[in-house]
Image 1 (tube, rainbow, N blue to C red):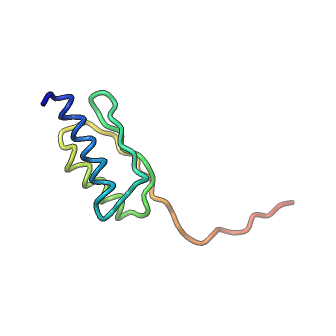
Image 2: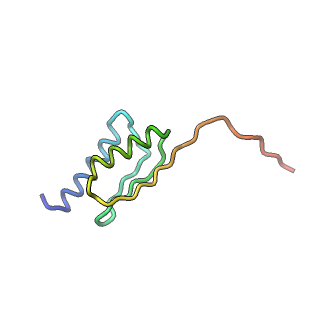
Length: 84
C-alpha cells in the first residue's frame, strides 16, 4: 500500500469510527487537504468534543491536522428581543 493509499485509508477509517462508535457524531467533517487533514463541525457537548479529538489523535497519529470543532449550546432562549 502506498503512502497516499495509507493516508486515504486512515482518513476513511476515522470517518467510519466517528459515525459508528458510541458518540456517533455525524456533524463532524473530515477532509484530506494535501498532506494534512481538516476536522471541523458541531458537536453536542464538551464530552463529545473530547471524544472526537481522542479518536482523531488515535487514528491520525503523526499526521498534521487542524481541528475546528464547535460545541452546540443547548439551553433556554435568552431575553426577549425588544422591537421599537
